[in-house]
Amino acid sequence: MARQAEVPITPGVLSWAIAESGFAPDEVAAALKVSAAVMADWLAGQALPSLTQFRRLAHVLRRSTATFFLPTPPQAAGALVAFRAPPGAKARSLRPKERVRLREVTRLQKTVAWVERTFGGEPVDLPHLRVGSDAEAAGSALRAYVGVSSEAQAAWRSDSDAFRAWREAFENARVSVFALSMGEDAARGFSVWDDEAPLVAVNTYWNAAARIFTLFHELAHLATRTDSICVENDLETEIRDTTDDLERWCERVAGVALMPKADLLGALAQARVTGNADLAVARKIANQFRVSMRAAVLRLVDVERATWSLFHAIPPASDCKRPGGPPGKGRSLAKQRLDEYGRRTPRILISASQHEMLHPVEVMQHLDVTWEGLEELRQAVAG
Image 1: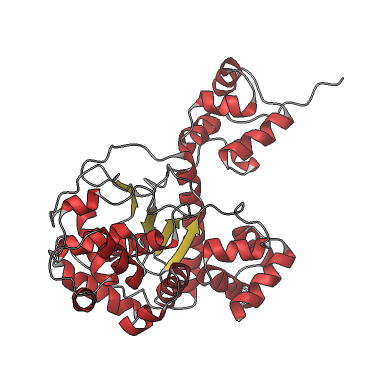
Image 2 (image 1 turned 90 degrees about the vertical axis):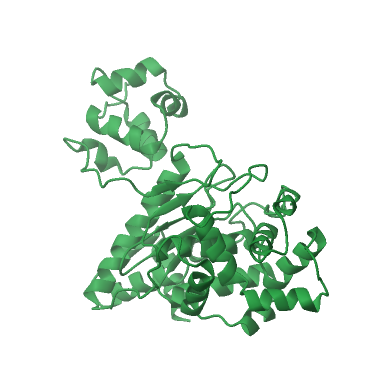
């Protein structure tokens, strides 16, 4: 049997790609089913992968095959985002899935921003807020910017309807919203600022109500013009009640935006709750405002209608989705992209191709769809 041809990759580029992936060299070797010694030889330039191994290597590291033939590693673009952990949370590095998703959406963001600038669009006028400023005023400003009334919020029939409506409102306000599968051990969300194309991403591992809170938490980050990826507290870790901590401030602002004080106190009065709320009341508030139990309790603490002991009493699985079928089952590729990327990003890229700013093939590559999928997306965003 003829030996497969070896592929002349650049060792330094391979080392860079592994480091950027978040995997250790031994983990990459295991994924390729080669020994750690073989991987060490590739990194030292003393051996080369076969064509089959090379293709698998590019897939595992989520890099184009052309990358590995560069003479030197690409210029570093700096840290993708600032890692934000609330008080008491353990520090950690970005996980491989987070790195892949960040590269994916920031690549789309750069293209959307370029299109917006070329079209002559004005910078996004999201309120610019100072960390530690009055959370009630900050949350009210963000709620006004997104432009959803209390009456509209009260009319939503399910958490899923609420998430779709908030997402549409964000995108109408020129904030792209990505809903990405990243898994239980990944961050609940991240945000990346750009004057023409700010974005928020939420992890679809969690249920719709939890994602809604993440949306506004990340919007608060964008309002401070910071990029972040946020690790949530676990329910056994006490959150300090302080306005000078960025994460706690973002949580308070998100709570205000989702549950304006007058509306919240009105709901408590209507339920005839005169003292501190218990779990049953918190659940009712969560259902009424279409937010997570965690969001409801944090807001009740802020308005002094609950204590931190109620926060610790929240069932650990309250933010988890109900078991369902495999993700993506029964959906076309174009529908999957709409679910992941929203409508704003595909609409802008397709518009750019219609104005001959981008070739349709480039749009297909950006959105990772076939020609048929691009046509389906074109019809969907046009509608």
